[in-house]
Length: 278
Ligand code: GLU
Image (cartoon, rainbow, N blue to C red; front, side, top):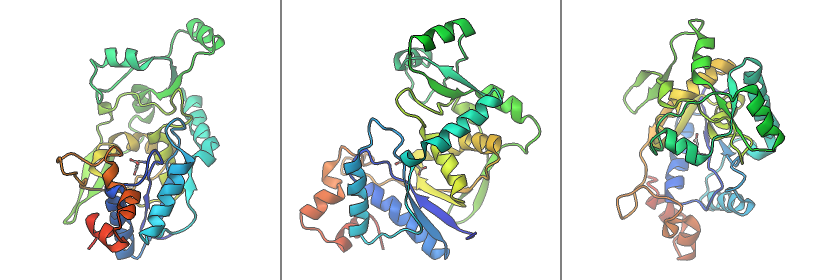
């Protein structure tokens, strides 16, 4: 296997904007410098928000920019069975539970703080089967305390390596910052953490390079990796491109969409430059 393999993993919930292209260029350039590979993965398990036309748009925009990828493109929605098998494996170990809580319940339990760790428990068996009989939707959640108990002292303390330009540092994982993460959602058969960690392992990703909005994700990814026997890659986080208002670019900033810039007459080189390419 190649000793450096990374990936660009957009979610087709909108068109690509300059921030995505900045990230894609970081990923491609890092792989080229290391003589390694950069894969393209479409993270489209949020079936309610992802659309085939956004996927087509992403592929078209990357192609137009001349950003090419190694190996076949992996579309996560084609592999939902893979993620279901991980949930089954964790279920067999007694580490997951069905969570019927609504968004409102969760907000009330976490004082409305979106990043507060959420923790719950399985319902008593009778109540759970009544809700299942009623057809109530649920998410599978990983019970963090059971997961940590299960891992016990059998593994090294959970930690991960973060690379910066100058050095590599080991960071002690603090998974309690995440609480019980959702492995599936009521409306999505695989949630981000599960699908991303599974695919990083499956695809032999050695370096995860992504925006600093996901800087904390390895704190919980190391738990999934340890439970599943998956290797922990090294992590690099790049800065986020900011819009004229000083806020990070988002899909709402339509003017920064690659398609809009192309329609306004900008060429590939100009757009790559705007996205910070040398
Ligand atoms: N699909 C994620 C996003 O578009 C990226 C996740 C990752 O790189 O791990 O924000």
